[in-house]
Length: 115
Length: 114
Image 1: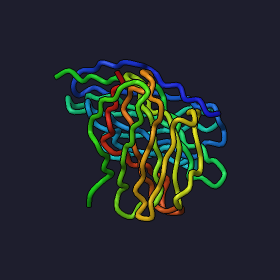
Image 2: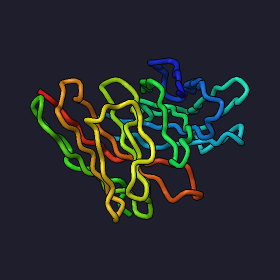
Image 3: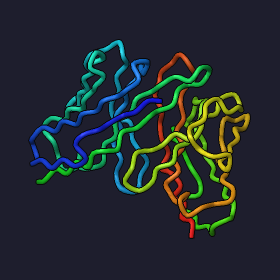
């Protein structure tokens, strides 16, 4: 089955700096790659996603890039703010026949933005 | 527009007991997926329901079962609880096929097994 590896496990930056989180996946049939932000005591919140037919997508301070050949994708956050501090998860979607497709998650990155 | 809702928020059960968790999908969504998130880990897929049937299942034992109702809401049942079942149980809903691949999560139910 699909396996998603995420690095780093923790990331500490100063306010205003950029943060980059990287993920690799194993199943070349995966076709959708969302990123989630999870704050303490809450469910994961979808922040950006990318489909396999797109190489890059940007939404204000957040961008995601996908390299299908290398089977890796990255989350880029620019001009970080203290409220960006949270756990970030990458995921890859694999279809399962008639199903909608399950998400396989990475292990998570704890991002801390220091004021 | 209400997002995905789950109940209860927290639950404490004893080993061997049974538990039922509930989920209401986001308005307009018809597919519900359940995930288990252990402390410090990413969510793990349990199963997915569409048109009131289980469509795909992850690596979870038969003690984990579910149901989807005609209004698209769903239940997750866990029998013969083990200490290792303690986790945050997340429900995610998805829009009808062909519109998007997005899965939106609820706040989760924190289950503690003692």
